[in-house]
Amino acid sequence: MDEVGIVGWAQTEHQRAMERETPQSIIYQVVNQALSSCGLSIHDIDVVIDAGSDFLDGRGISTCITVDAMGGHFKEESKVAGDGMLAAIYAYMRIASGLFSTALVVAYGKSSESDPSMQTGTMCEPFFLRPLGFDGLAAAALQARCYMHRYGIGEESTAAVAVKNRKAGAANPYAQLREEVTLDQVIASPHVASPIRELEACPVTDGGCAVVLAHGDIARALRVRPAWIAGVGHCSDSYSPGSRELHKATAASKAAEAAFRLAGVTDPPAQLDLVELTEFYAYQELMLYEAIGLCGEGEGADLLGTGATAAAGRTPSNISGGAICANPLVATGLVRLAEAASQVSGRAAGASVDGAKRALAHGSGGLAMQTAACVVVEK
Image 1 (cartoon, rainbow, N blue to C red):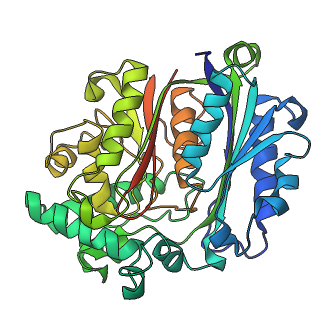
Image 2: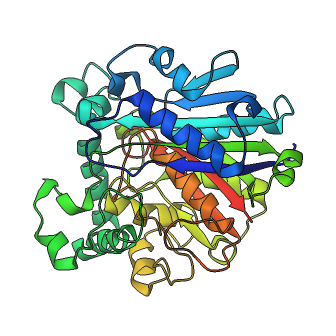
């Protein structure tokens, strides 16, 4: 396959509600900034891939009203009805196959104008779970309880994830939540669905992200340092949460395995300089440590306790603050990719990992991490 580099990216300053912005204005903003960041114009783009949610937008085929803002008119254009990380992998395949030379990937979300609970509720099968009011939060609470009970994980460990990520988010100019919290504050916060507490859950967020991909020859000719895509992988687990092993993030494990195989990563703790993980809830980050091979099964809390995933640790995790600090639904995974690319290319806007050469970005979707997408980027 041909080499593909990530040459430009941009994201909004994520907010609880962008009352003065429309989806089109959010898209237009990040598209222009992403193109400017690498010295390209929309005329240099061969294909546009966007990720959006008709449900959150409140209309069918929402691309029809956003294609102008993306600059997709009279171009090859396609939509991914899922996380932006999947859209990035789709764009990568189109360039790596030799069909196109450049691609623009766009993802956005205005959850403040919709109901994320109802949106995740539609992911349930319609005859048994949906009438019960089952949604993404309920599924996550069941998974958290299953995982914590299976391995004896205490509430201090999940709370510590929130403390770590909120501290990292305080240094991120794009994060929605930029105030640090203490362990006592997290534990004292009310349950939103036991055992998940309010400060352990991602916020409702408005925002967007755009990423520019280019064939190797073009990427080298630009006056910017690219982040090279070394490996990709994606996986979807069983549709029904009841037919899965909820104490494992199986989809993430298989997606990471595929990405590592392409990138030649055989020892993740030693070969990854940082990871950007989509943790909608604090406990999920512990599960994802195990899924991507940073530690053994059931050892996520122990790894966190050693400080290995802290900003100054061996493998910093979510130095951006992660989804707990900003969750612009549908764009969340693409933000993880932009953050990872900014680190390995030495172009990070906030805190940076010195000497970072290789990183893993992870996106997630579905009930209880049903789907996962992973991308390995290198300096």
